[in-house]
Amino acid sequence: MQKTYHIVTYGCQMNVHESEKIAGILRQNGYTQACETVEEADIVVFNTCCIRENAENHAMGNIGALKKVKRARPSMLIAVGGCMTQQDGAAQRLRKKFPFVDIVFGTHNLEDLGGMLARKSAQKKALVEVTQEKAIEEADISYRTSYPNAWVNIMYGCNNFCSYCIVPYVRGRERSRDPQAVIGEVHSLLEKGYREITLLGQNVNSYAEDRADGVTFPQLLRRICAGQGKFRLRFMTSNPKDFGEELVEAIAELPQVCKLVHLPVQAGSDRILKLMNRKYTAREYLSKVERLKKRIPGCEVTTDIMVGFPTETEEDFLQTLSLVRQADFSAAFTFVYSRRQGTKAAEMEGQIPEAVQKERIMRLVELVNEQTRAKSQTYLGKTVEILCEDHDKKRGLYLGRDEYGRMGYFPSEVNRVGEFVRMKVTDASGISLYGTAEAAGAKESE
Ligand code: SAH
Ligand code: SF4
Ligand code: F3S
Image (cartoon, rainbow, N blue to C red; front, side, top):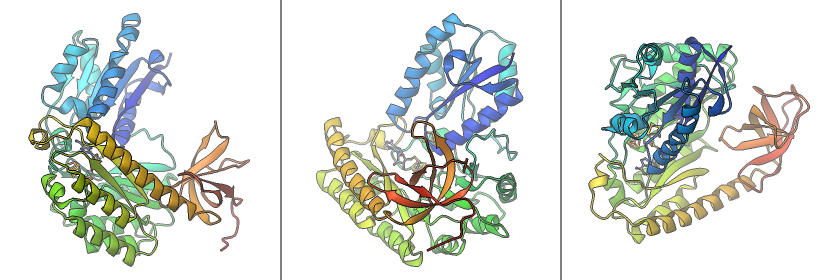
């Protein structure tokens, strides 16, 4: 009998990729089959997030729901890892609330999950392993399921301490991977046929500042692309405070680097940006966006925006709306500020009532949607290049993204997953694009 596993992932792409690492470790330890539901799994792993309260509530609810399943089938193992467990006292709270959980492990302990499984099998009581920073594992242990896309960590942790953010507390200080190891991993993925690589870090612009190699992030991009053929290279996230000319040039010059930059702005009011400890003004941010668009024709920018930060006034919020209009983002992730225990902002006076936060997020989302739809419309009748990544059974269509991350759907008789497909856009009325694909190997037109 094959032993089965089920991983539930919350949070950012870093976590999605770390779940691939968890899958890799499980598969090396006898759990060889992924299964669709928790009910049938021999082990369930929750890879949690604590960036906002609702992410935590979501995980808590789903862990709690396993109580009955565990009672009916006590041999099933339940493990909880990820950012939530790494908060002060969180492991103890989790144990108390969910005594049926078998293993609790921190973000710094993930790579030792194999060892934890062995240790757990030798003891009856729950195993809790949440430690502080540890050395970086350079080997690629991931069991990847996202072909033709692949994520590659270039650094862990964060030194920025934006006043609202829990990440530096749960992920530790910045630690960059060896550039040779990163380049080797990317090249090996390309050899295996992966077509889109996304480099991950909380602030990729400060890559390797903690190392003595003297390699900057733009240089890393150049070394990754050198001598390579066609593929897509993306990265996230860039902090605007460190986004410089050298990087603009690398994006402009390297054909493989997507002309799409995710540059979280958070707010449009200088007073709020200062309280957030973001270290740039709205004007500085806008001039970086302008510089990018000028140097790289067709370059698009996406962002993260937060509303309802402590003391945010209607006037501050209007400045955020105004910045959104000026920056002309092609997409934006919008969030309501969530008070995170242990952060500076959690202690600030002037926390904003929920009703005000809700009203502001609705106005912001309306504006962002309006802009995204208007951008979509400009695609009508054009031909875009989609990297086909999956088949949507419900719609009966293949899907993928263009260079700018826009989802495109098209019908095809043959499997096109993993191919760059030229698609003529026939419907761009929503956020996604629909169209018809040129046959494989069709001549480039236009
Ligand atoms: N390192 C990235 C962001 C990681 S978190 C960066 O600096 O841009 C992703 C997004 O979550 C952030 O950009 C921010 O908009 C949002 N976020 C972080 N902490 C939050 C909080 N306490 N409440 C609401 N949103 C938050
Ligand atoms: Fe959080 Fe700021 Fe670090 Fe991003 S840069 S992870 S928002 S502290
Ligand atoms: Fe990511 Fe959430 Fe952790 S956003 S870094 S999984 S707190």
